[in-house]
Length: 255
Ligand code: 1GP
Image 1: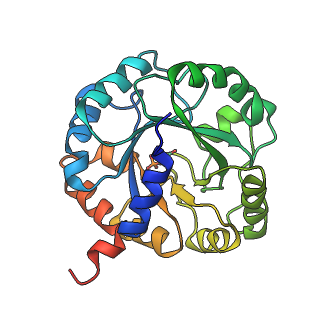
Image 2: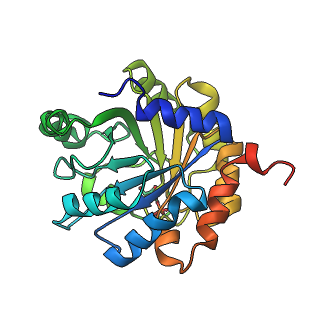
C-alpha cells in the first residue's frame, strides 16, 4: 500500500478545487470506443478520478475494460462495484461499499465477505463507503437488483441517521445515490443536511444532467460529484468540461 493513499489524494483535490469531479464509466452500457474516448479526454477536461463499474452489470469483460482504461489515463482509477465479480488488479482503489440504506444481507455484508480476499490479492486500496440509496422518482436498477427500499427523498432525518451510522462504523465516505439515470437527483436540501450532520466526506451521484446541478451539490456541501449517463450519451467533451468546472468552485470564482 502506498504511503499516500488515493483517498488522501481525493481529499487534497477537494480542498484545493472546492470539490472533486468523478467520471463514472460503465463498460456494460457503453461501447469501448466511447469509454476510452472519455478516458482519454478526462484529465484535460478537469476530471479528478475515474470510477468504473455500476450498481448492476451483465458484462463479462470487466477486468479487461479496467485494464484498457488504466492504460489511457494517469488519473486515479477507482472501482465502483455492483458485486464481488467486479474487482480488478488494474485499478488503484475500490469503493468498498455497504448498502446501508437497505436491509438485504447480501449487499450489507455477503458480497463484501466474498470480495475482501480478492481486494487484498489485487493490492487495491479499499475506501470503506456507506452507500445510501435515495428515492429518485422511479424504480432504478440498483433498487430492483438489491431488493431494497430507497430512503424517501423528504426524510432527511433518516438519511442523516444512516450517514452517521456509516461514520460511527468507521467508514470514510458516504455516497448519496439517486441511481444511474435517475429521474430526480438527490435533493440539495438532503445533501446540505447530511453534510452538516456528519464529519466524513459525502459523494453525490445519480441523475445529474447539467453543470448547474453539479455546482448545487458542491454548494450544498458535497465533496465529490459523480456523473455517468449524461456524459456517455452526449457527443463531444464540452459538457464534461463544464460539469468538471462547475464542481471546482475555488477555481471558477473570479473567472
Ligand atoms: C450511478 O451515481 C452514478 O451510480 C451516476 O449516475 O449515470 O445518472 O450520472 P448517472
